[in-house]
Amino acid sequence: MPLPSTAATWAPMAAWPFLFHALRTDALAPGTSEAALMDAAIEAGAEDVVTNEDGSIEVISPPMTGRGQGRAGESRLQPEFGEVTMKPQNETAFEGEDALKMQKLLDALRSAG
Image: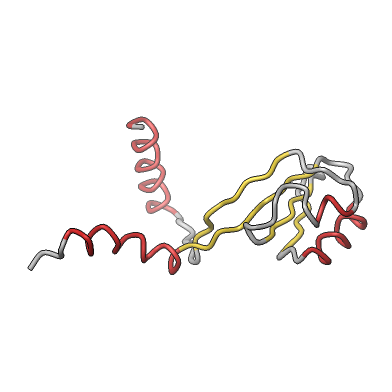
């Protein structure tokens, strides 16, 4: 028996909170004072601070914190880039032939869009 149209519309939306969680990522340029940023980020409730290979720093926080609020703003450090991302709750690493198949699928989806 098919679902009523309202249930069919709401079902995919109801699954989102269980599959993904939203987080904000702010990126700061290489050379940013990591110590000053770390203190400000912790006080503002950041979930993580990640230093990349190129020296840039990413601050991961709840999505409701605006660009430059709290974390970077308190230490007068302004992010170069910020976005809210839906991060999957589960991640899968593909290897070997499975990785090739997945890459083929991604390439096909990119060329179709």
